[in-house]
Length: 161
Length: 161
DNA sequence: CCGATTTACGAAGCATACTTCGCATTACAT
DNA sequence: ATGTAATGCGAAGTATGCTTCGTAAATCGG
Image (cartoon, rainbow over the protein chains, first blue to last red):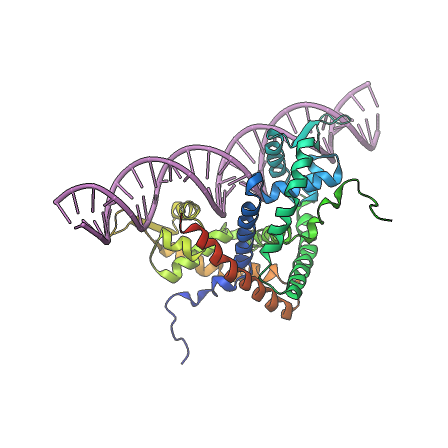
């Protein structure tokens, strides 16, 4: 019989099958795991990304850091300010360009990064720990494939203005 | 030669290989795709989740909706208020319990949900469109596996207080 | 050298997303 | 019935995450 049960919700397929919804849950789960494992240091996933990006650069202006971690500029600035307020990051006026802020890890920031390395890694691993080892590799590869393909497109739409 | 190149960044493995980072990028990509496809209706992924959850329930208090979409209560309330302000949702005092807010779709909200169905679905599909059809199914299954396993744990930690 | 464009930020505003706290109301046990 | 628990919200505070607009400084063409 066609048209059975047409009252309400056959309009959309279930939440739990929608990629976007599942991605939000994953993000939520990872953030929670990260906060849990790194509770002693009161650091967020974003701040950790920033610290590692900064460590890799040594010195960088805010725009470069924002691009490194694929985040918009103002959000990056906000996070850097918070890290600066806690003494982990130095944000001084650029020597060559007075508009810019040259950021670098402080001694304290570098120490924090070293200490947080293990729990942070544990959080990242715990996020996908429910998959088999083989699936974990596949899962990461698939995410990388999507990001590689779509990330381009996102940047592209932003440029022409 | 051991210990080569120990200057800076062998502290952590690259951002692009960390599950949490990739998940954030995926979330970012999905939200952008959703906003793009549904631009005409000015609706966000979260609001869409809420509308569908509400359609399925018919009537529900805010706590039930928050649980349906796996979101914390105050954030849910905020989104519902915004939907109410735009006339898509009705939030009236509960008839049996005056503390509660009984929500339901307005006629306008139900109409919006019908119109937005196609572009929203397109956004969800576009998010994983770069994977092969077979990988798409695997990818969704893996996300579901993680959410099923970890989602439990998250709720559990929250309950005892 | 100087005006126009570009660039790096900052400020403001909206929408998630979560925590803690407090209030009002209901439900429950004695 | 009455004091206590549990419950449904709301308010406030912090952190992301994005957009748009404005400002100041650098750059570049002429």
